[in-house]
Amino acid sequence: MATKAVFLGIAVLSTLRLSCAAPDVSSGNTTDVTTSSKFLASHSSSSDTSSPTVGSPSLDMTSAAMEAAITDLMLGKSAFGATPMGGSVKTIVDVLTKTMMPKVVAAHKTDQAMLIRLANEVAKCSSTKNSGVNAAKAPLNAYRAYSRAHKSCRNNQAVAYSSMKACLVTQRSLFTQKGLKCNFFGAMGRKFGTQKNNIEIMKKAGGETTQGYITLISATICGKHVHGTKGTRAARGGWGGGLSGSMLDQYLKAKDQCERAKRAYNNQVKLCRAKTAAFNKKKGQCDQYQGLMDTNSCNGAVRLKDVC
Image 1 (cartoon, rainbow, N blue to C red):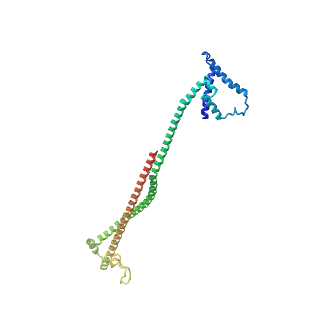
Image 2 (tube, helix red, strand yellow):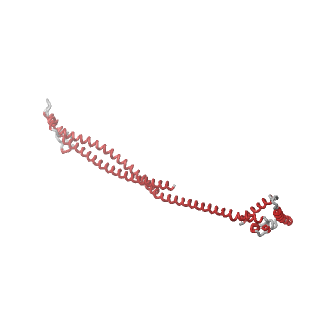
Image 3 (cartoon, rainbow, N blue to C red):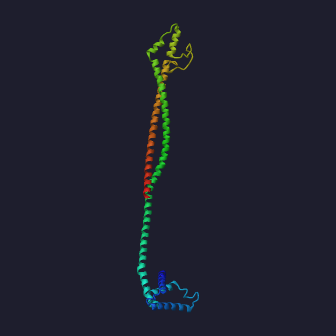
């Protein structure tokens, strides 16, 4: 209210100054000017005569007293209201209170409504953002969980892969050994089990003595004679119950080596198949983790992007 009164007072004083500074002499309204001048002069002379000192109540007028004085001036309760300027002041007051102030208040209300609407939009935006971020937390948390599981799974897959590769290397080595030993066994069977070859062994060379011929046949077929000429020396025999190095001894040993190589190879094949199956299973599990990880990562990223 004090500010409004001051504003009205300044407007009135400005009007009075303009009116007093430019009197309409040509129109003959000198009486109004003279009356106004006398009115102002009387207030001025009375003020000079009193000569108030600094700190007196008249100079230390409070805002309430100033507001009351200007209000009386506006309402025409003072002596100034009876002067010719009273109507002009009333017109100015009407323009200020009935035209300008309502427009100012209406503009203020419009601006305030816009500010409230914008504030609500900002709050809504923040709420939407928080809701979207919260919605993106679930897939992102799932992504992190699957990421840890995926990393551990890939480490185990690497171990399974190394074990499988080592097993396959051993399998290839055993396959080669099996081929060599079984090929040797096959050669021994063809050598000792073919009648043509045995006939060649039984042929006597020209000039060969009877004992030499019998000894050669015995050593070739029966093996090494390690018991002495009289058979009194104890020595280990060969496979099949005969002498060491006999046809039967060589044949049975070659057969055993082939069978051992086959069993070793077949067992290794089973082991490698199990290791390969374990590796494939682990790889499939890791691929599944990776798929879930990638899916949740993309879902979380898309939701965050949609929020932005």
